[in-house]
Length: 173
Image 1 (cartoon, one colour):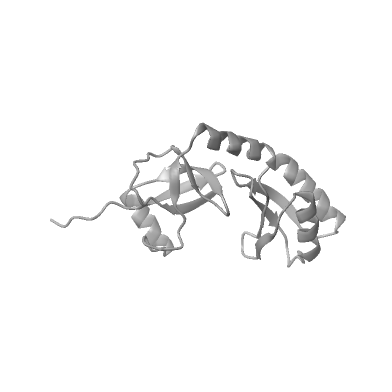
Image 2 (tube, one colour):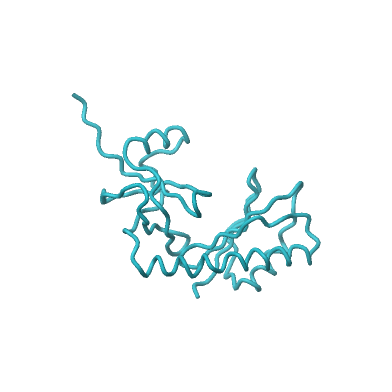
């Protein structure tokens, strides 16, 4: 009988499942689907919901071409505390206003794009602006204005791909 070691990776979903990612569970803490857990974020932490554990995660890793022992994979920190969850709620409450403001700014700059969503990391240090555009968008001026408006320290990166995403870091409140 072959013994397979327990999977050390958990799939975590964010924003009601709009985004999912894999996180290392180095201490093999026992989590169940639906648990709120705190994970490493960009320069801080984020809070997500456990969506998959165990062997099914191995299948998803293989399907997506991700190695279980990938050293770049961020870690699960803990079961979320009341403080983590309160921080998440405060920053999620800022997202609707951020969408409205970012749309107004893009329109002022006459950019041919539509901001569809803004997702703020649980600790408030990073914001991701999701947008839809028919063509390429020149972000240089937009990033400067967003940095000022949303108190962004520095931009992490701007990626153009099929989902059209721009990410920026925000200081904690």
